[in-house]
Image (cartoon, rainbow over all chains, first blue to last red; front, top):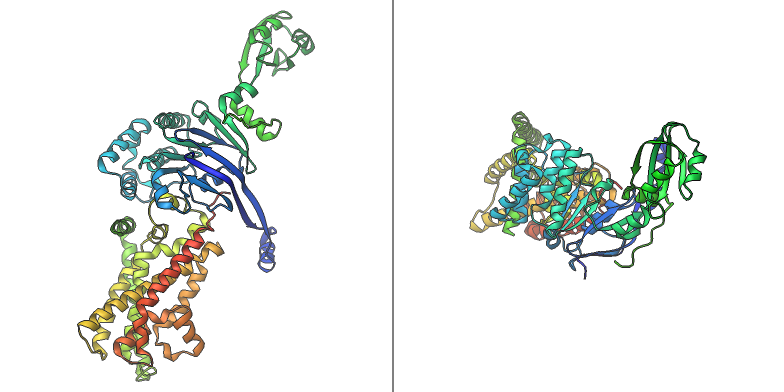
Amino acid sequence: MALVEARRLTKVFRRPDKPPGLAGSLRHLVSRKYVEKVAVDGVDLSIEAGEAVAYVGPNGAGKSTTVKLLSGILEPTSGEVRIDGMVPQRERMAVAHRIGVLFGQRTQLWWDLPVADSLAVLRDLYGVDRATYEKRLKRFDDVLGTGELMAVTGRKLSLGQRMRADLAAALIHGPDVVYLDEPTIGLDLAVKDRVREFFRDLRDEGTTVMLTSHDLADIEGFCKRLVIIDEGRLVFDGDLEAVKDEFARERILHVSTEQRVASDVVRDALPGAVVTAGETPLWHTIRFDRFALTAGQAVAAVSGVATVVDFRIDEPGIEDVIRRVYSGDLLLTSDSAL
Amino acid sequence: MLRVIRLYFRFLGLHLRALLEYQSDFWVMAVATVLMQVVNLVFLSAVFAKVPALNGWSFWAVVAMFAMMAIAEGVGSFFFEGTWRLSIAINEGTLDYALVRPYPVVLQVTSMEVGINGLTNIVTGGAMLVVALSRVDVAWSALTVLLAVVLLLGAVFIKVAINLATNSISFWLSGPSPMFAMAVHQVGELARFPLSIYPLALKATLGFVVPFAFISTFPISFLMDAGSTPWLGLLTPLVAVYCVAVALVVFSRGLRRYESAGN
């Protein structure tokens, strides 16, 4: 059995259906109407020990709800979750020692206390012995630079500082399953890099990590496995690299020429590629399949009709693939190998 | 168990420390609660200046009942004030982290805040109780002292449990303020006076439906061996166990309805 198992996991929220305005609210008092919103719809997921999984989806797709179901915060409407065989909603105490949860939007630090005190409370709460605690603190300081934050009161932390301190708080008990929900949201690039490096360390140590993020740069170079959720349903569960090979085949060549050349002329020189006018009359944008044509061939073909002055190539990342999945013009089928 | 209690005081200590940062607030609160008890006593003496007894209860007997209520409320706010923050926590979805920590969720909730006014209520209530009990007719012995302590503890837990149960209703109502619990608390204020002065419907409500009378009238009635049913006071510990059990069930049922926020 996998370390984290979700079977037919479903969460339905019931929301009051209020007409707008005060009049609407008053009417709602008399005749109550509700709408049901299926936030998570029959999700099957199993994560093996030591796996790093990226969990992505557009806003409101059900990512956070899934994390809250998997950590026992929400009661599923139907279906069930097991962490190492235990149901987190029923065996809260035992599961709590095994999991670490970070919600990027929300802190678990005590507002009025210095970070050091918050961490010390968590240490006692989880029963972490002093030596292990000191060792972990040192590591958080090495990678996240949390040492300088220890004396700062919770409410005085900047967003980046808060996230680093919160990461330390979420991991102080050395959990073997970690859920990171939007852990880089609102951070500047330098902090993001630091945090991402920390995630890679965590993964390399064998911690099971499930990372949800909007920022797909978080997942590139971190996860092997990609799970995409949309409107509460899993639309893809498979290998990240395979997806890139399969769907991120397109390359975009931007090329500028010395003289103005009509797009049609370039198009004729490059059968199989899509040529459109570039940002200025001297530029052309050429889209091609990297397996049908190499970038060198494309540039050479343009050189055949005009003198090439400058060019650059855009290589689409996983972002583009996922964006296309969101917008509905790409339907991934789940990788059966997993 | 010991670990749970130790940590509980640790949590309270954190909030107390934060509270004491604002010293002036502390003194304003302290003076205000003492003043409230003084007003209560003035009111009572004014009443008793006109009538020698209230349905057979002397001034000091009623002061003892007031004192019991003050102590129960004091313990409720000093040690369990977080209970009153439950509705806002549910509304804002801030219980998430409490649910993934290895500590009873209910105790994380009740220790979310310290009500400093509770401390003065405990002190003034305690003083009132000692003075009142020395003025009324109680056949004191080692056993009655022990029983008095047990009844007091029972009374305190009844108040705390009623607070918890009524505040847990917020899981179903999901508004941002504990209006239901406030309303019940207001009704409970009536139980400061001997239950016998009320009509039957109120007697049934305060004695049975929401057993506030077990905080004040019944234990004092038992200690003084006065009133129509003094033996009822002896049931206080049982009623306390029952109330705590009901409150915990309501809380944990409610917790399953917790929806967090941001969906």
